[in-house]
Image 1 (cartoon, helix red, strand yellow):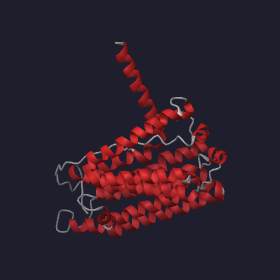
Image 2: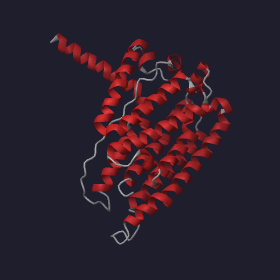
Image 3: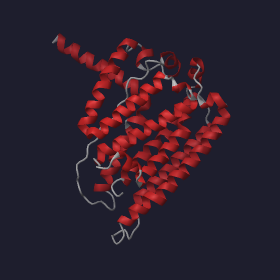
Length: 317
């Protein structure tokens, strides 16, 4: 009985570690793939043009690695709830778990997506190691590049898991969906530093040169607002000139008379609202607590909705 209780306490401890290590990133790691899968399922089953074709697809719940080993002092200021600064785990313990996850990750990737997903898995791990070894996160440009390329890997990986496409990675990137992926890449590349507005105190303490510290808080906010608006226009242009054109061709002669279903219009309206709200909040609310809300709820909400939109589209491309 004592052994069983010890086991339960150990499991509870590990769950708490994973929870506090990942909670601040759920909106950019766990929720987007789930919404993509929901988009696929909805358009196949419940939408106004549903085919009721229950083709099997699998959902892999993405999880974060414990990547706070090299940023303990920064986390003591910006994110004291994380496992290491809160005392839930030691740096040595975090390293052991990181090694375990790095071994398990490719195995799970192969089970769910075969060799294509294993390649993406190793590509992401190499990208993380490259970033950590060279300390690229201390540079504003490379910090955004890391986020943008990671989002691209995440998008392609989820596509392979949910759809099970036989396309090669390069064929996928060269398709209409590839254009949409590049739009998301541009969005992340030019605006990922929204998360840095809330962390300026800790970033300044450790000498990290994020965009708000590099060019000044006020200038960076105006630049970010401009990039958010441009990103929205680019994504809207790609959607209406590549994705929706292809989708509407698939419906010519059908019940929709060549028009994409109304659900796409609803999602596009939601994207506009989330984007505009992010811009307004960046201009009006400038405290760390409010910046965190802007990032977690509005900016990340826009990012998540892009995955939902992508999931809705991939049924008909």
